[in-house]
Image (cartoon, rainbow, N blue to C red; front, side, top):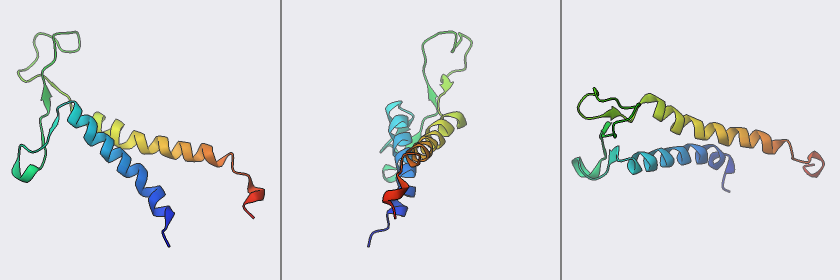
Length: 99
């Protein structure tokens, strides 16, 4: 018999890892297939246009896009939303039908 508890725990974690990898690839920070045996490499700098966020005196290579804050938002925020959704869903379970 399949244990759905493992699926309920693993699905938000898998979703956050896949989402983080997708967006870092989309933002051209993770580059797949350029290194040893297709292992992705991290290019931590991105060229930005000159704006108040990236002043003229910026260092060569641009602004560090992949930071701890990026990882925290993507990898920790998504499971938190799943958890809060589960708490909200539990408010509407009718207990009489469970017994």
